[in-house]
Image (cartoon, rainbow, N blue to C red):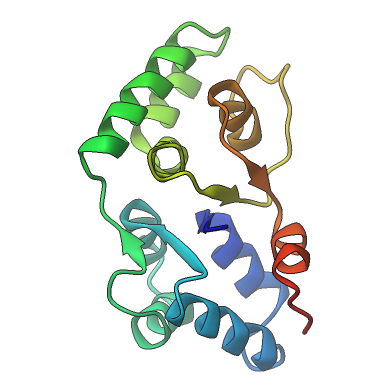
Length: 159
């Protein structure tokens, strides 16, 4: 099973698992990226690079070319479907605009187009109207979604 990582997997892990303390975690994540077990979206790379710091340096040094998948024609088709779903939902206009412009919809669209599982720390909140939550959007279009620990357990990874 291929896993597609959300921005918050990198960002929250950097906050909660400092690279100088959790070296085994970061080495394992790099190894999984190198052997193609995990990938992400070019839109995630853009979000990470916006906050230029040690995480953007780590990305440059520890993930291979091709790790960040481009938004291709298949993903754009799925993106359009996701936007139609969000537009028909009971979300605020700000939530719909954010979902259209940030990485979340592109991550889900790429996973849908490629048959991947989205990995995120977000939690489902179907009644939430001020933000489209990744697990809820995934469920709406039939994309598998899990958190980091579920992914690692599914891969048989221990750290």
